[in-house]
Length: 78
Image (tube, rainbow, N blue to C red):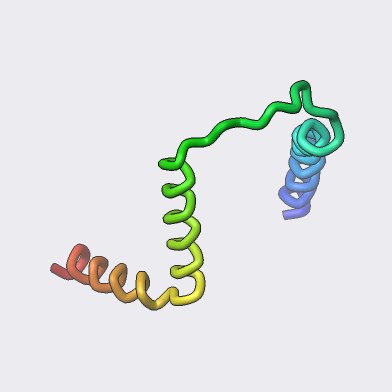
């Protein structure tokens, strides 16, 4: 199993180099243009609904888990 740990470490080092390129491009290099990207109201509404859903499921996970448990019982048990 030592070889598997060595392979994991090598893969981690390789992935860090790829992630570092992305982080450097996002945070450390200046932007090519300073113009803002225009967004539509529909996009703002969709993002608001998605964020609200994530917060509700994060705070009250039993709401969705009960529904999923019922669906799984119907699907697998019949």
